[in-house]
Image (cartoon, rainbow, N blue to C red; front, side, top):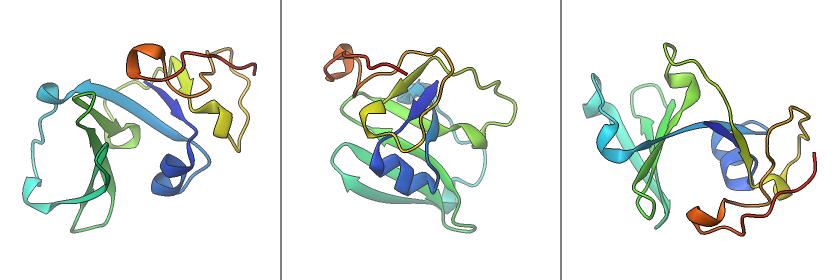
Length: 118
């Protein structure tokens, strides 16, 4: 769980940061309303999924990592405990919270692995 500061996530979430939760794709199960899930593939790296009935953002599948980013706000029972900021080099809302601030992504996810100061 964490915050993404990239321009793409800011645009998609309509906010200055996007709160994300990442799960292995096989661990995500839609329990109702699956027939109302629409898709928009912005890139080959993101299959954005939204509700066709209300327009709400639900999740984004990242096939290159086999991870599903389920929007934190759609999981009311889940306690959101952020651990990291990613793409902090693009931030428009600096946050002082003591969490690591990744310039882009961790090295194991294909990023530089570099951190930047708060």
